[in-house]
Image 1 (cartoon, rainbow, N blue to C red):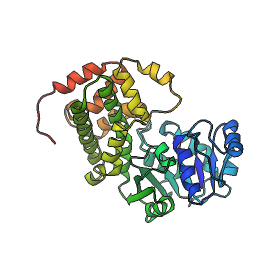
Image 2 (cartoon, rainbow, N blue to C red; image 1 turned 90 degrees about the vertical axis):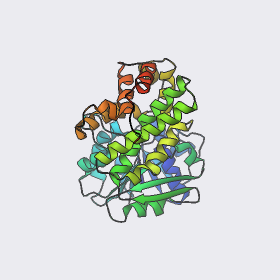
Image 3 (cartoon, rainbow, N blue to C red; image 1 turned 30 degrees about the horizontal axis):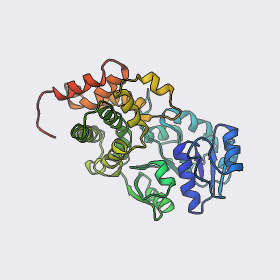
Length: 334
């Protein structure tokens, strides 16, 4: 296996694969990180308390990372994925299966990862997409986790499921790539909103209502893009949203908490060395909705997603966003 990216989830995936007996090469950007992994058997920047099994190596040289690889795991944040994939394109063989672990929407192109991989590697390249409530630290700690893998390539999702599954990591599979991708992207935006709920001190009633209505907005967008409502109600939709909104490990939720307490987005981003995908995704998801839904007053159809974007852009405060939600025209629950 070649794991592209040495961040939190790339590290976690390398641990998971190596514990199952697979040889893993992690392709990282910095030589000092590669040296630490190879010599000290730990990633000095991410999940450093976990020791790598003997089958894990790290390198900055793509020729070395891909030399013996039969599969690739893509673990680079969405906004940096196109450049990272383009750099390693010469080393990815035409039939090498690629498993994407990234969640979000690329700014500018408004591409989901399935679109991005297709445009870089070719539409016929064998690709699969993993999503669900899967915090890297809990997976690394071998706490029970269930995810879903989606692929249009016949048998590929099940193949990756067999490779990854263990007593503590269970994989389901589906052909609904769009549903899995939309759920994995939008849940980060809902998590920012949930964090703002906490930061404002609004209580359990407000949090439960917001997350539930956020899932409704996710469903509307997914259906507009051709996905199945069943997928949105599964691990990659409702499951991942619940985990991200209610769990203490979510970076996106923490961004929301700090916004709710009065910090500016600039201050929050400057103080963090990890990527909160929901910030970039929030602005892109609004543009994606506008491109695919011609309904009148989209801000009433997707009030949470539009509201988070306005708050991140600085045109509305979290408290004003709450007031706008609570004073919307009354409607039938859908």
